[in-house]
Length: 240
Length: 240
DNA sequence: GAGTGGTCTAGACCACTTA
DNA sequence: AAGTGGTCTAGACCACTCT
Image (cartoon, rainbow over all chains, first blue to last red; front, top):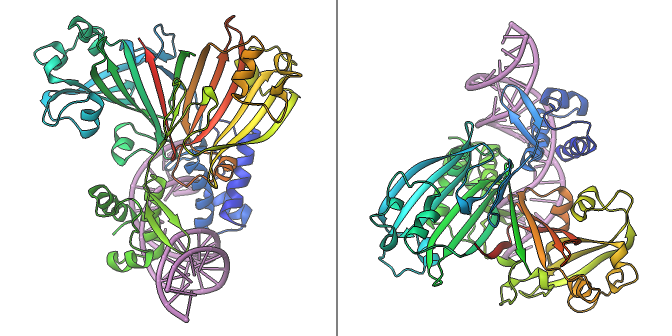
C-alpha cells in the first residue's frame, strides 16, 4: 500500500460523506495498522489531503475534515447583508472589525503602487495598512496608497480617518472615486501572510489589486488586499 | 539544521534574486552536504517551497524557480489585447483554443446549477463542457448550463454552436444576457482538476461561478469555470 | 499518562533526464 | 552511466492535547 492510495481512500470517504466537516480522520497509528505501512507513509497520505485543503491538522489532537462557509466580499455591491462586506463603502459587516496597523503620511510607494497610480518616480504617497479581524482570527490584510498631493494634511493621513473611510474623504476632497479597476490572483500565501492571517496549510489566498479613479479619470487610490481563501468568496455584479 | 531553516534560506535567496525564475536550485544531495542533514530533511525543505508555489520540480532534472506571467481573464471587458481573453464574448485570444468536450441536450442539472438558474427540481438543462488549451497545456475548464426550455432544438444543444458561442445564440433567441453575476473562490485543485488541467503542486485554482440574466431578469445561463491559478489573473472594471 | 501529530535519521530501491 | 527527484521502511525523540 502506498501513501497515494491511503489518500485516495480517505478522499473518497470524505466526498461520500463518511467523514463530514469537523469529523476526525483515523490517526496515523490506525492507518499504519490497517494499511500495514510505515509511519512516514501514513503521514504522507494524510499530508496530501492537507495540501489539497480537505483537512486541517491539530497537533496532539488529530486530523479533521475542513469546512467552508465563506464571507462574501462584494466590491460592486452597495448594500450588504449579514454575511457580506462591501469594501468600497468601507463598511464592516459579517462580524468583522477593522484594526488600523499603520498610517504613513509620506512615503515612497512600492513599484506596484507607483505604476497603478501613474506616478512619476520620486512622488510620494500616503499609506494606510489595516487588518480586518473576526473574533481573534485575522481575515483580510489591506494596504492603501493615495498620492500625498491629495491626502497630505487631510484625515487620510491621520490615524483616525473617520466614517466612510478613504473613499468618503476622497469625495469630500473633490476626488470621488467613480470607476474601479480590479485585478485578482489566487496564490499560496507567503510565510508572512501565513503568520499575519493565521492561514491553514492547504489554503490559498485571494489577492485583490484595486485602482479607484475619479471623474477626471485620474487614479486616486490603489489598494492591495489579501484575503484568506478559506474564509472568503468574491462577488461581482455587472452589466453587459 | 532543520527543514524549515533550509526552506528559509532558499526562500530568502529566491526573493533576493540569487535564484531567478527558471533557475535551478541546489540538488537534494548538495543540500545534504552543505547543511549536514539526512535526505528526507533536505527533501522536506524543498517540498515546503513547492507547497508555497515558489518552485516546480522536474523529476530527474531538478527543482526550479517558478515564474508567473498571467493571462488576463476579463469578464467585464469588451475589447481584448494579446494577453487578454474576454469570456463573455466567447472570443479566444492569448493563443488559446477551445475544445468542446461534451454537449448534453437534456440532463438533470447539478444542485448548484439548479439553484443558480432558479429552476424547479426535475427541470432539465442543456450542458456544454469545454476546455481552453494553450499549445498542449490545458488552461481552463468550463461547464455551462442553459435551461433546456430555451436551448432545446437550437445550436446551443449541438456540438457546433457557431460564432460568438452561447451568448450570441441566446441573443438570437430573444434572451440576450444583459446582466452578469459572478462569484469567485480560490481553492486547491481536486485530483481530477490536477489531471485535467495539469496543475503544478503548490498552485491554487480560481473558480468562477457566473450567472447570466436577460432583460427580464431571468437567469438564462450558469457557468462554472475553473482556471489554473498559476496561469491566470482576473480583471474587473466597474463603476461606483 | 496515554494518545496524538511534528521532526529527524540512515538506508534502500525506483523512475526519469541528460549526456 | 551518472545524476536527479519519488517513494518507502524502521526507528527515535519531541511537543501538544485530552482526560
